[in-house]
Length: 358
Ligand code: X2X
Image (cartoon, rainbow, N blue to C red; front, side, top):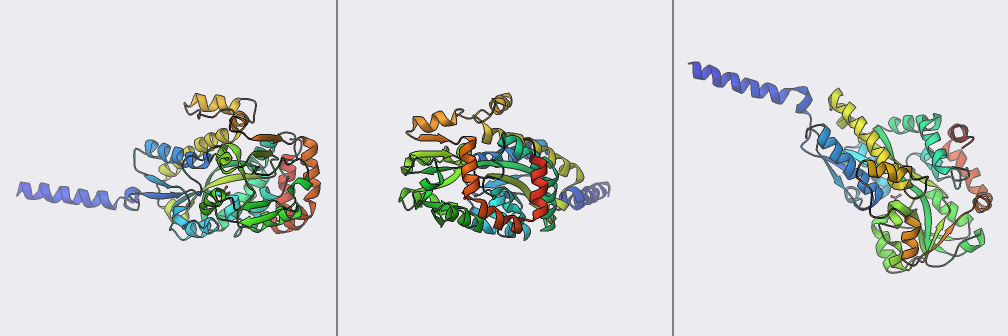
């Protein structure tokens, strides 16, 4: 009889445990989507975040990173819809890929809008931490996904097989791979280039086959890990024409099902991942603080001198002077005039105010 009671008690305890709200709704594995591959700065940040979460939740939250746009069959501009409907649990997303559904996200794609400041990294941080950042977070949350934190793919620079590019006239006729989101087409057409919209998942094969003369992506984040020089891209043009911030987001239901304690841990991990991501993106383009930070967490990457690495691999590097940025800024005025309306004049004004004096 005693044994019967003991067994019944144990069974009841097990049922109780399974039904406990903190665990009942947790999945065995959460899917985190990333558009580029695991060696990109963006991909490395996804892995870093997932590792921190596993460690700090003692394995309660197990995130598997799916690189290479696998979860959206390569179609990068459909990612938001998949996070919203739950096919994707977490995403480190680029504003670029979500801008077809969220026009406000074209803010940082306004050509030379952030770069036209003395310290472009400080300008970037200022709007993100300021009123414009708050407005962007509200907008993305109104689309039915939870915002967890920022990250950074980086300022997007050109790699081309033809060049060098010094003035807007040098862009004439260049066939450039772009992401399939409308503002890019307008920017490159305004500069007289010939933009070709190709998903990243197919772009690299395209580079191999030489179907374009160039492309634009962040140097630390993509251009170096992807060794763009392998495809005959002999020129790197550092023009910083736009910046690509990343947003770490989760499906709303997935987020709500986490305990308050685990939500707080996820937010903390996101803060650390943001520091890591920005340091990877800015390494070699700042006063040395990014390298110092990466060393302090034992995560300094193999390449710490990006310009040196590109030159070592045969590239000619053109670093824009503030005057060159101003010339290109003027050449793309019509694009900003058109797109400020799409982004929303209030948001643009807020960002300008946040960045003033930087
Ligand atoms: O497609 C690109 O160029 C990439 C990888 O940078 C983005 O997803 C925006």
